[in-house]
Image (tube, rainbow, N blue to C red):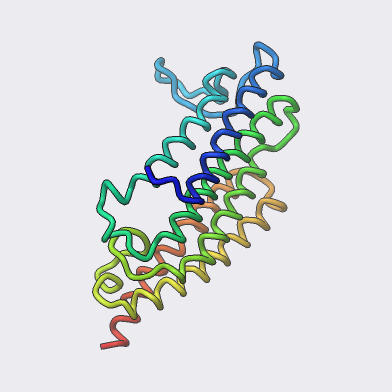
Length: 217
C-alpha cells in the first residue's frame, strides 16, 4: 500500500477513531449499549449492540475501506485508475472522517440518550456528498471510477459533460440533505433523502450521458 498524503491523513483519522472507541469504552457504563441495529444469531432484529462490539465496528469498517481503496490500483491495475488520484484521495479521507464523526456521535448518544446521533451522522454524509460532487467534474476519462455507461466509456467528451452535470446534481442533493438534517421531523425522511442524494445523481447522470451521446451524433 503506497502511503500518499491522503492515505496518511486517512490513517491518522482511523487511528483517532480507534482512540475514540477506546475512550468511549472506558467512560460509558458497563451495561451501556450502542445504537447500531443488527440481526443476531437468533435471527431477531436488535436496536442496540453491546458497547464492546458496537464501538469496535466503525473503526474496523473504516480500516477495511481505507485498505480497499488504497490497494485498488494494484488489484484492478493502475491504467484503469489513471486520472482518478485526486478524487480517490478525497474519497478515502472523507470516508475516514465520516466514520470518525459517526463514532463520536454514537458515543455522545450513549452518554446522553437525548442526543440525536443520526442527524449528525447524516450531516457528515451531506458534507461528503458535497465534496465528492464538487470534485466529480475533475475526474478524467477512466474505466474504474465514475458514471460508467456505454456512452461515457466510448467518448471522453460525453464523459466530461456527464460528470460535470452529475457533480452539480450531487451538490444540490447534498445541500438538500443538509437542510433536511436540520428540519426533517423523522429519521425515515432523512434516510429517503440520503438515498436520493447519493443514488439520484448517478441515475440522472447515466440518463444524461445517453442524451448527450445522441446529441453528439
